[in-house]
Amino acid sequence: MKIGIVGGTGHIGQGLAHRLSHNHEIILGSRDIEKASYASECTIKALKERGIESMCSGAVNQEAVDKGDIVVLSVNYKNLESTLDSLTGFENKIVISPINPISKGDHFYYDPPADGSAALAVKRLLPENAKVVSAFNNIAANKWKQLDDELDYSVAVCGDDHEAKKIVMGLVNEVSLLKAVDAGPLAMSSVVESITPLIFNIAKYNDMKDVGIKFI
Image 1 (cartoon, rainbow, N blue to C red):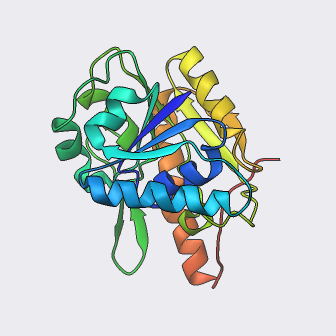
Image 2: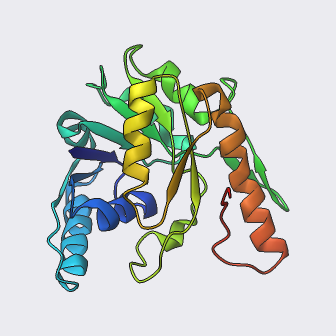
Image 3: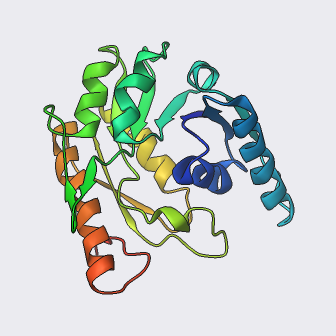
């Protein structure tokens, strides 16, 4: 499977490349082709040192969309609309949103758009036949590239298209010890996204690191 990642040079994009590019072709997208190429080279080198062959390449964001069977939107919510306005070709594709609209005062808090969640905003901004699924929202960002550490978390997956959600859940279950759980329709994405600022606050006020969620 080909997975295009818009904004692929961030923690989630590079993390998915490190964790999945031995099984899937990962296209790390960026506005800056040199930055994307460097990120892909670092991924290939890191995995080669472990004796693992990586199928990873760098590209501009539009090429990541065009080539991907699945497209991951690894962008800050504040840049979401301007990023999507500059891209085309999402028709009939599975689009994964790991985006959390968060603001910070003296604490972190959920700051959703009028749509109700970032995932629902993505759905509004994309063609009607794009299959939007929210996933990977509540994973500690700095853990993605630490390949010696297992990612032992639950991943709540929301979506309205049953087959698309099933495919994304299968992808989640390929990553380390992650366990996908069906969290219902895309309308439930607001609840999942709002867990992330809770995690941040728990980490901050309790001097904890790598806080995540696990349903047992």
